[in-house]
Image 1: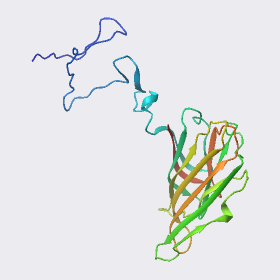
Image 2: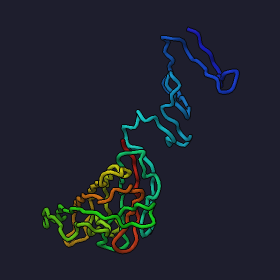
Image 3: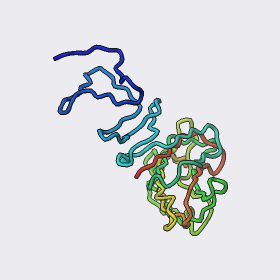
Length: 244
């Protein structure tokens, strides 16, 4: 077996293909070695994916979009709200928002959201929803499952609360996710559901699991989403993913 040692192997002309190995051969990258490139193509020259050189996929073949694609990350530091005003379009059929350690400045504040059909100029889309909660106190008390009728909506443009009573202790927070289905469809209403787990501010303190679902009763495309607290500001990381 012959070996070729080189710092660089390139074609003689720019933008020309360089073939390593012949038909039926295996080209092996040995253990410990690194193969670096920004663009991966198949044998037909079709791009499978392209990186921006910093670890982020800047493009991806549609046949590979079975996994979630991270579209945006927003980190709030004592902010009144977090808004996603770009990236929600017909590219994906499902958008997933993940909340990571949402800590309110005001004790017992509620996290809520609303949608927009005008790029975030207004967050006032009509919606109908349902809202319930399971909880359990740290001391074993306050264990129940409740349909919280006071917080569901019936053809309302108000923000939808997706969890209530987050503790603002130094170690208190809320985590969870919200699924928004096919927001760019102009035939059907836009369904969504969320599940948020919190450290409860109530006495006795404990865990609370809030589940919200419903639909934006509007056939216009939902192109922006905003999250905010019912009172005061928040620290939080919220990520938006596309799927499908």
